[in-house]
Length: 334
Image 1 (spheres, helix red, strand yellow):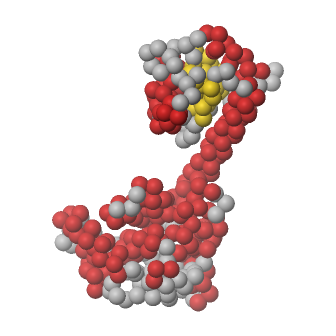
Image 2 (cartoon, one colour):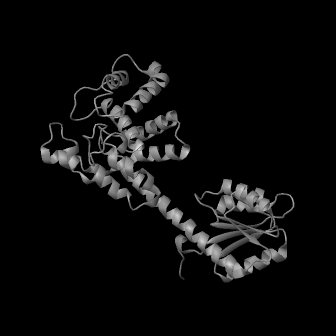
Image 3 (spheres, rainbow, N blue to C red):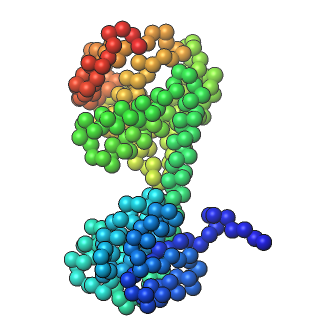
């Protein structure tokens, strides 16, 4: 007997229509195309099925008693465990207002009755291909994040550094008024900013004495290595400037591209500040002293014109930290 692996199973499609004849027609078409089909006239059963079995696509009739297709679309989208769950609405309504209502409900496509069978199956094939691509991208992205955290966990000195940088960078971006999408990207960039260190020998990273010039060059290449690791993933394209340019300086003396002032992407400038703050308040093999957060903030105030950071962003970072954290900081060293 041959066993079919989970990933080899045909896509599972949920079909909901209150008219049995319509339901049987769509089920027959999709079964012929080798899809697995769950067809029902019961919207509550459809919601429970979606919660448990996570179908890859749904085809819904719009005009149904009780709960119409628009509301069912919203419900299915909310319970789906998939990052991208395509829904096709089938309707006899042709007014532009009806399509707008469908779009607002989250529908991904529309077909009018009577529909063209070839057009329907072609669109379903396209949406499922897109859905599976999204799953692959999400899986690849998760692997990279897990790798970054696992690598860091091997080093006692930097364990948790990237997550702290990611979280505080996102908080800072929110304080600055960035939109949610950018805040998410800045958090991702903060977590992955040092992933390029995977390409550097641990004996150099953990060295507790001064680095030789050739070792410094190797360490300074980690932003380039990191951006090369993440570049193939389309979903991470927005954070590549953070990874590559988080060690640039406002005065143009940073690396790897020696960008200056506003040439440095603003997301990279944000992560640069937070990265420095976390590094100075953490134990490192090359430094005996650990500064309190209050001490680091005072240092940043005094050195805001040193050429390392964007002076305006330093002012805003200090403002945020003093407003939100000053009363939480201990008077003695951590």
